[in-house]
Each structure stands twice: as structure tokens, then as C-alpha cells.
Length: 154
Ligand SMILES: [Zn+2]
Image 1: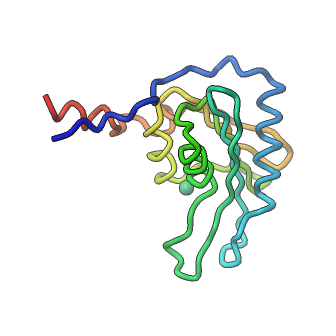
Image 2: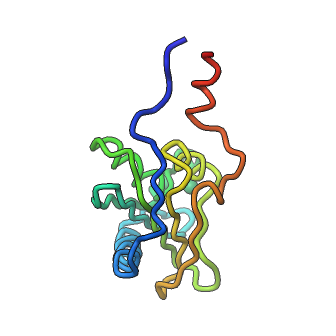
Image 3: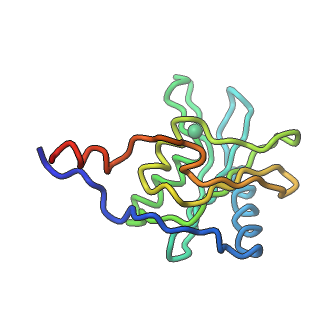
């Protein structure tokens, strides 16, 4: 069986993001939300993903008449980054229109994030810019990832 361990997915703690960077990332996620294509749910979501070298990739949810083909904003942003050669992330900010609670990533997106490390930050926000942040590890504990497949080779 071939090696499947993904390269460039080392964990990089990012608790040291400055407030200005966090606020800007949140603002970019809110901007991305405006592009949401969600005629079925009318639930707009935007995401802004910060790479280790400080590039930002944004994404929005993209729904489909065949409902289960819809793609979340977070996965959209990650796929954009990976397709441009970026696999090492500091943080992702997620925005929605919910004012009464922080937007939280779905289970599928948590697993997708986990592929690229456990210790990077997820900023779950409200439209007023307030947020709650957790690491990927905190959002998806006792998870399964690329390292687990590598161990199966031994
Ligand atoms: Zn999702």
C-alpha cells in the first residue's frame, strides 16, 4: 500500500493572531457571504481562510437543484487554497446571517479541516463581528486523519 500521508499538513499553532488580523479575516468572510448561491435554503454562509504565508482564500456556499450536491463555504475556501498549492493554514473565519448564535461548521467541514491539521483556529462569528474560536481539534476530538492511514502501513 502506498504512503498516503499528506504533505504540508503539520500543525501550526495560531493563537498568536493579532486582533487586527482576526477582524480583517472576519470582514473577508462577511464579504464572501455576499456571493452565496443559496436559492433553496436562503442561508448565506461565507468563509475566509488564512494560510501560513498569510494569503486569504474565500468561499461561499453553493447550492444545487440536486440538493445533496451543495457545497459549504468552508470546504469551498479550502478547495480553492489547495488547488492553488496551499495546504497549511492558520485560521478560518465563518460568517452567516444568524444574529442569535455563532455559525458553526458542519461535521463534514470539520473533517475536511482536520485533513490539514488539528491545531489551527476556527473563528465562528455573528454579523456584528463578534466571535467564538476553537481549534480544529476541539471541534473534532478523537478524529481520524491522514496519520492514521499511514500507521496502517507499518
Ligand atoms: Zn459544512
